[in-house]
Amino acid sequence: MKHIANFVVTLFILISIISCKTETKNEQKNIQSTDQIHKKKETDVHWSHQKGEDGPENWENLSDKFTDCGGSAQSPINISTNAISKVDTLTAIEFNYGKSDVTIINNKHTVQFNITGDNNVKLNGTDYKLLQFHYHTQSEHTIDGNHYPIEVHFVHKNSDTNFAVLGVLFEEGDSNALFDKYLENFPTSKGEFKSEDMIDIISLFPKNKSYYNYKGSLTTPPCSEVVNWYVLKTPLTASKQQIEIFEKILNNNYRPIQSLNGREVQVYNQ
Ligand SMILES: [Zn+2]
Picture (cartoon, rainbow, N blue to C red):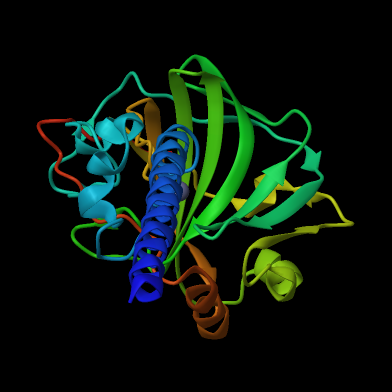
């Protein structure tokens, strides 16, 4: 009996030690994961274009840095062509683009062409430098409530608080020359492709450069309200097949329409 009693006591002590160790391990794990959350908040918070916990309706709650996503001057917007202001002070876009090396990147949110070299625009007296352009399917901006199948955004910067994005819409029609050349090289999942040829950036715009202009935001987190938007009135074309390939790669990476909240949309006609 004494042996059995000794054994039970020893077993009890052993179990206590093991469970204590497990607890300490769990506590350490908890501390680690809280640390990771804090780090994540500062750098790489996961967000998505799809409906759900990390979707557009919740972007403003995902990080302290994303609070602008709930702001009152957000993009994209619907452009009502019967509620725009013709303003005589607006001027034509001055393009100072050259030929550029490009690296095509799929960052899981979009397919983006990173640009080198000096490509600038002058927009109503202010100079901006082109940084990159990237694509959305369907279009982010709507015209009189209608989406277009694709929208490209040429992102330009003047300073950290002053960006200009030139948006060009695509409709179905003739095949697009840039896509003819590069679509088969688009990274279909995360990755990049360095082009051997240079791209003549101005050839990526429609001939007519009339535009709608309003003040808004980046359309992805952190949704900073620092963007002068220039949405060109004239769409480009892409073939049905090109649009289908794009849709497959980009999978509806557009943000829903945001409230205008009294902002004015102006128009410049070339
Ligand atoms: Zn964009």
